[in-house]
Image 1 (cartoon, helix red, strand yellow):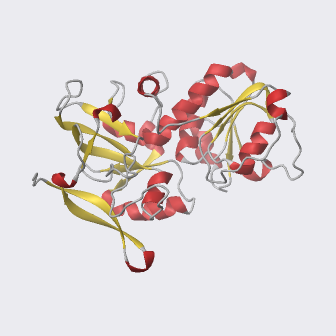
Image 2 (tube, one colour):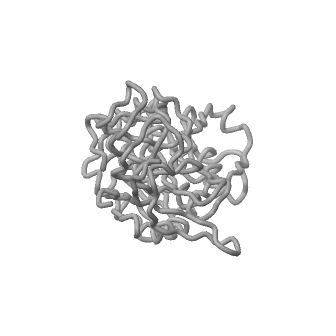
Image 3 (tube, rainbow, N blue to C red):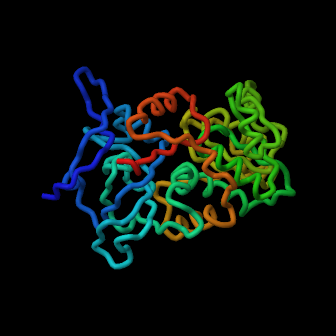
Amino acid sequence: MDDRKFQALVVEEAAGGVFIRTVKERYVSDLPVGEVLIRVEYSSLNYKDALSASGNRGVTKNYPHTPGIDAAGVVVESAVEEVRPGDSVIVTSYDLGMNTPGGFGRYIRVPASWVVPLPSGLTLKESMVLGTAGFTAGLSVSKVDEVISPDEGPVLVTGATGGVGSVAVAILAKLGYEVIAVSGKADAEAYLKGLGAKEVVDRERLTDQKARPLLKDCWAGVVDTVGGDMLTAAIKSTHPHGIVTCCGNVASAELSLTVYPFILRGITLAGIDSQGCPMDLRRRVWTKLAHAWKLEKLESLAQVSALEDLSGHIEAMLQGRIKGRILVDLTAL
């Protein structure tokens, strides 16, 4: 038995189907079998973590459980040559924090195939300001940049104050795109224009009450993070031969539209899968985020939370009250 102790946020089911969150002491021997043991320095809060931390069995089947789909830290032990003790690494996606104990604990143990070497242009802290949200934004921008150029027209970003949306706005602006940011938050304008958005529009503008097959074309590209009616309207109002990326369904998983945007305007709809993204693409996007796409004042995108304060941020995220990113600092544990 490995009797090394560490602190972790543990979600447990209490009587009456109520889920409680407590910072508890765990043992390294409690972790699952895996090839690489990592001491986590930083993590970040994502919507999927908030669901897991609330007992959503569509994300996490069994409790007690430690969420955290993101982790950045230092390798302590490794059973494979390509990952060595002392390496600084990133682990995001796969099953981390879903049914495998995640980054809201000081240690994780994972397969070597989940591990990404920390790119030279990022610190561990910066990598978790980005986390899965930033990586998903990077995948989305990469798709947009493959199809259109900045001189072809504006790019719409929905859910722009969220983690994915905030990073997407900032990267697109850095690359020279005219960014139109969509938000339902009354106080979002200064924040989003500070990230580089040229214009901020209320999400009510992105509705189509008459359910028309096509709308006036307004955007060369779209990074959609919310799904539902907003995604439907965005597709209908994209320029001919433009591109729409889709990575979220917080508004709805349903998509109600005809084929006309695709067969009359030649629009590309690109799904973004950050969880099962192939490792070669994963490394390429992280390298761009560390170098060509690296954002100035990256850490300003995040609020820093200690593990014991994380529960309040989880509730705020579930209520849609978070702007930007929540960085989880485990270095003091």
